[in-house]
Image (cartoon, rainbow, N blue to C red):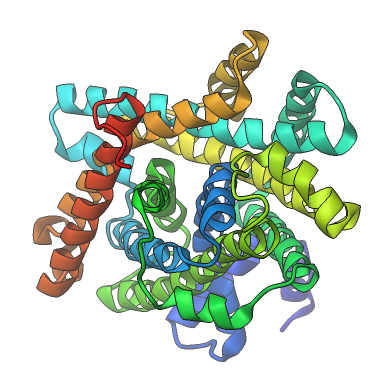
Length: 437
């Protein structure tokens, strides 16, 4: 390497060096274990959707009410998530377009407009849950008003979003660090909590449904598995991350992407399992009625100590802030994909942030707001899920990378399960299905 080349290498950005490394890998000039690290990023960012504050209450309710019994439901939900995130990533790699752009280019204008409106509402609902989660954590940890916690969350989130201007790699590393913090927090909880590992292992692979209420919780876990914004976002994160010259390059990228999806979503799944295990080992029996985040925090303090309760809140705050960052990125991608022009990040941030402030200013109960946000997500989920199945299965769009018969059947069956459970959740929420006793 010449002195001039070495000087350029030192000055080139982290994103440029990553792109150069991926190109070298595709050309067969770079091999080894470190090559996989170049490909790590998109699935890690998407995995935040499966560790957002909306998961906390559901997992706590499952563990406190039924111990380790519903762990198998979390595992099933995680496997479904892996499948759909892998399909989303593949669509971006193969077509060079994200899911929103494919919809704009291939569907009629009235359909596209309707999809855009629904997706925008979903983005606001997503950010409401994530924004509130971080604010609730800050409010509980520092004993401050919720509105102050929201302002701090907004400032931190906006500051983190500015990192995206330096390229995709710094953002990927940042989100990876935040995911690691969440994982470490729950690793600490597993050490502190008196876990019955034999029972946990047994129920992870043994399907069991004790009663009707357990079924309702299971519906909540699986029904909220695939997040609308995660499907849009993952395809956008992979669409232009590397320059591809041939189908051979695409095949390599899809292979690496599938591996990353498995690893990243496995970690997200283990975090969700850890939430259930922590609640099961700590609350089940004496505190079966724990269902809200603030209840869990105040109950953890006398049971496991202030340290365990503090770690719980740190994980919630990090989850809220990181998922809010990712939610804004997804919202920006959805808007740009459907309307076809660039949206400044601060505008995108305001669009999704203002509804959350309005909700809190009106004095709406934060837990009820989280429930309403999940209902909105349930209504909007069929839009990206069906679109993803449609495009990933079409040879005219995907060529030789179109879903095979087995993959398409499994994906369709998984989508049917998720969508049915989402509608069951909606019917229950609006009282159209009577409670079973």
